[in-house]
Amino acid sequence: EPVDGSARMRLGLSLVATAAFFAARRLLEAPLDEALRTLSPREREVMEWTAAGRRQADIAATLGLSERTVENHLRSARRRLGVTTTAQAIRMAIRNGEIDG
Image (cartoon, rainbow, N blue to C red; front, side, top):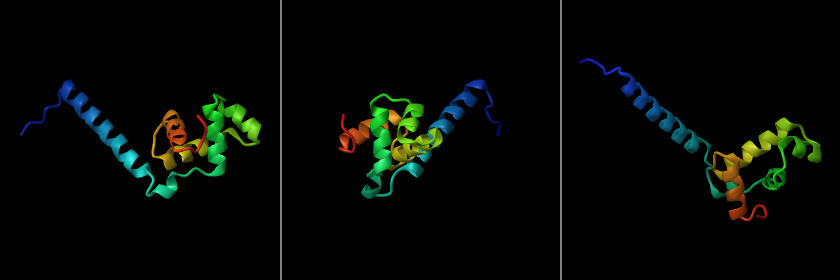
C-alpha cells in the first residue's frame, strides 16, 4: 500500500512526534512522590533570587557559585517541581510556600 509522503502529511507527523516527545519528557522528569517536590535550601535560594528578577550571572556572583551551578540548581528545581520552565517553577514554588511571592 502506498505511503502518503506529502509535505502536509510530513508536517502533521512532525507535530505529533514533537508533542509525543515533550509529553514523554514531562512524564520522565516528573517527581516520583510528594517528598521530591520540596526544594533544597540552595535551590530555594536560587529560585528566590530568580523570582526577584536577578540574572544568573548576578546570582552566581552573589552566592559565590559558577553560572553553570546556578543553571543546575534551576534545572533541578524545575525537575523537583514537575515543570518545564523557570517561570512555572517560580509560580509553583510560590504556590507551595517554598519562596515568597
